Length: 292
Ligand SMILES: O=P(O)(O)OC[C@H]1O[C@H](O[C@H]2O[C@H](CO)[C@@H](O)[C@H](O)[C@H]2O)[C@H](O)[C@@H](O)[C@@H]1O
Image 1 (spheres, rainbow, N blue to C red):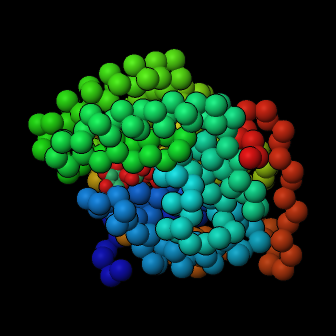
Image 2 (image 1 turned 135 degrees about the horizontal axis):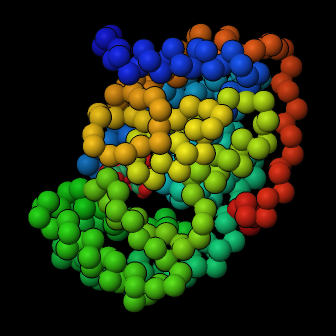
Image 3 (image 1 turned 180 degrees about the horizontal axis):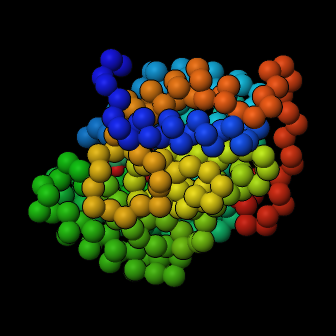
């Protein structure tokens, strides 16, 4: 990682340096694809950069730091790819949550799972002969990938998916386009930002930070914007964003995590190096995913 850091990286570090000094703990939430892992054509081939994994591992063991990986992937999938078993994970855009060894699934997502499954079969039939289109069943949500389809087909894939969603789950499912994918999810007011807000409430004196790269990460940026720092990863484009700081690539994410590990944690106010602070119990918010 000898590349010179971008101006965006330097600005991010400067902001974090001053904000960390006002807090005793750090809540470090990060997306996976495009943030910890470079984007690749085959979703199954995505891997966390080893430097990011090593830094997260050490940050996770720090008594004043909570690490949460908040992904659109299925929880089991992202957990296996990061391979740090006791970190907090949110999968399926927050509909699955695993903290302190307990996995919870949003009750409405559970209720609508049979519609997702029916839709998966219907989409499989619809796109059987569509070159480069892959449908990924993630249990509570599904993703139609068209990155490897001819660009001219993208609109047709989106329209067909939306039509089938209307037929199978008109009331229960919603559809949204993101980076070379169409995401289908339960029609429930719960997203990555909801998870980040829940984790924030559990650690009142923390500085919340959220790193992400895609449209589905905007709710995470909005969740932290009042008290913390939202950091968007990727080359600048015309999209509006609630993030206030930027990094250019997953390699810069790795560099920032390394900075947190070496320097950032020492900027926290009143840092105690020996004992882990007691975590406050769950907030009792009844919209939180439930065990099961
Ligand atoms: O919230 P994330 O952790 O960023 O997950 C979002 C989606 O990521 C994956 O798809 C994206 O990454 C793939 C691998 O780089 C790429 O091929 C694809 O085009 C991207 O959209 C994942 O496969 C999806 O399930 C996630 O929803």
